[in-house]
Structures are given as structure tokens and as C-alpha cells.
Length: 283
Image 1 (cartoon, helix red, strand yellow):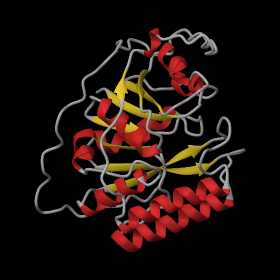
Image 2 (image 1 turned 30 degrees about the vertical axis):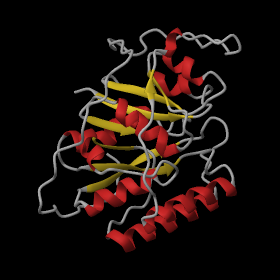
Image 3 (image 1 turned 120 degrees about the vertical axis):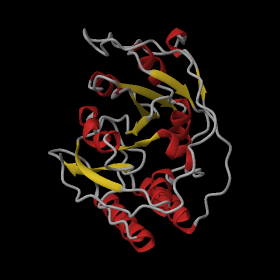
């Protein structure tokens, strides 16, 4: 089964080769460039990824543009900064593929050298408390690595296009009675400085966005994102991309401009299923 992996990207040229090299067989990377100035888009395209341009800034805007460009039944999300190992994606996608869960989140387990500042951990714990109070879903991490069915996610009608997107996904899924689980994934030292946890201000903005989501104050938005064959674009000021290593992306089909599926998922059954939260142990 083919699985699409959405990677929001803003100036991640240093991390992309490492991330894309480790993409498991059958997992197609969709790199959503959110206004990079370091050649990230061209590097990703030359390394075999499908590249989507989303000029509207915002983590949620990038995630949603990638979702619209995806065509696989199952879609995953993860950061492109090398803080998460793509080789662990099957841990997260497996329960969705097998039908055991509707939404699986990767609970970050910090390894040696991983930078997860205290203010970021406190913010994450606060959001987990708010989520449990609102929905009863007890998750230890609102992590960026996650998996679900593409059509069902479109059916949630997410509207936040900033840092509140991941939380809104969990909230709406819980409200619809989705089976939500989490599993442990390694949290590694990232390449470069985090746009969120790297500063107190960045973390505060993320928490503020998520608090708006908790209040239901996300507003209406218009979908964006355009797919282009950026592998053919070469800016004179863009640094050259590293040469792909032998064996990278075996048998990967060349996709230039897929057409996003129209519409959303069929309505779920009227009787919501009981929310089953996983224990959070790794597989």
C-alpha cells in the first residue's frame, strides 16, 4: 500500500537530505515549501519528493496544502527538520492501515542531545490537560508525527492554518468518536533552530494559537497550495542540491502534478464509536 507523507518545510535545506534518504519504501514524501529562501524546494524535488508550494505562511496552511495534494488512502504528517526519523513512520501508520485506529500520534521520547526546552514541555503538558478536560482523550503529547485516513481527515473540515492545526485535528477527531491512539517515537536533535520550541516567543505563539482552537475561534479560511514541477526550476542564487545517494527511493514513480481528489469523505456512522486511547508504548 502506498502512503503519502506530508512534510511542512520552511528553510530546511540542511535537514532534507537526511530525512528523505530515510523515507521507508512505499512512503511518498510530499514536501510543502512554505516560503523557503535556502533552496529547500529544489533540493527536495531533486531528491525525488513531490514538491508543493504554499505561499501563505502558517504550519496549518502547509499541512493542509499537502493533504490536498496527497492521493494515497493513508496520509502521514511529520516535521522536516530531522527531529523525527522517517523509518519509524510504520509504527504510526500501522494501526491505521490495519484498521485498529483512526488517528495515531507519535509520542516524542527525547533521546541523547534532543532539544526539548522546559517551556515547550510545559506548554505541551498544558495542552494535553486542556484536551483531556475537553474530550476525555488523555494524550501525553500533541506530536507532529501522525497518521490517519486522508478522506476522513478532509471530512473533519479543519479551518486553522497556523500552529493550532494539529490540536484542531485531535479535537475534531475526538468529537466525531474517532479511535485515537499514540505510540512512542524517538525525538532527535534537529537540524538548525526550531521555529516553535527554539524560542519562548515561538512557543507562546503556538500555545496562543492552540488556545484559540480550544475556544473554537479558528474562523473560516480558503484552501491554498499549488503543485509544480520544481525539479525543473533552477534559480541562479539557489545553492546546488546534494547528489542523491545510490538506491534512494527505489522504484519511486515520478509524479509531477497530481490532481487532488475532489470532495470529502463519506459521512461517518451516526453512532460514534467509543474513543480508545492507546497506552503510548512503542511498538
